[in-house]
Length: 281
Image 1 (cartoon, rainbow, N blue to C red):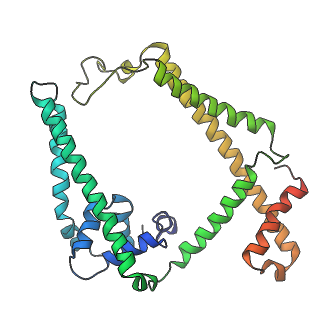
Image 2 (image 1 turned 30 degrees about the vertical axis):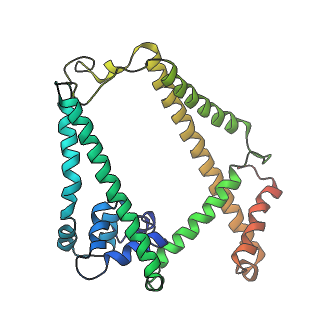
Image 3 (image 1 turned 90 degrees about the horizontal axis):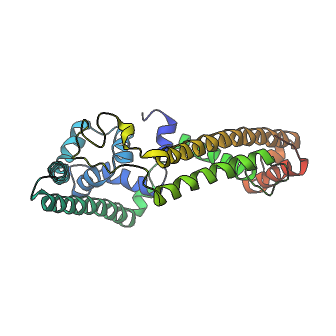
């Protein structure tokens, strides 16, 4: 995956936080900081970052052995929750849940503390790490697209179609209806991890947890709102790409000298030019 620019960009390999994590992970030996990052860091992007950096898999696995201290409380909590419907196990389930939360929080805090310490104590060394030029170029292109997206989605633009406005408002209204239904009505039956699939309320059919018309109305409102939102985003994506084409053509017409002008000076007028032309996309 390290050969794919999109994966490296998703990991934000050029960000200060990930560069500090990179510095910690590439230190020689099995240091305390490296172990904390491997065990306390989230799977994404910590595990992916080790692959992108081409680090030794056996060494990374060895440094991850202390993660068993995080796995044991989680496993015990799951076991206690399954037995929670038996006398005396509800207290054990609560205790195991608290232990799991404490260990997970401690690992997360340790992960952040190690990264922050490295970023402060080894600032010069981290700054000297090479920048991923391909990711930097992709980030710049995405920033341009984000700017064009914001301009294309500006409701103050007279060229913004009324149908698109209705689509977005309807999607938002459908989501609000679903949110209020979930609070005001009993839409679903209560299910726990201790319930059997072939016993009530599931009774072998997952749809049995939906209670009457309110439950199906909630599902319909959420699914309908999601569909309308996706349609609106698809239209907005086409509108944004069309504006980018117009802006690139404007830069080309202005000539290579002006096209090579400083980024801030060249792009802002182009983005505004699409509005001046009044082109409907």
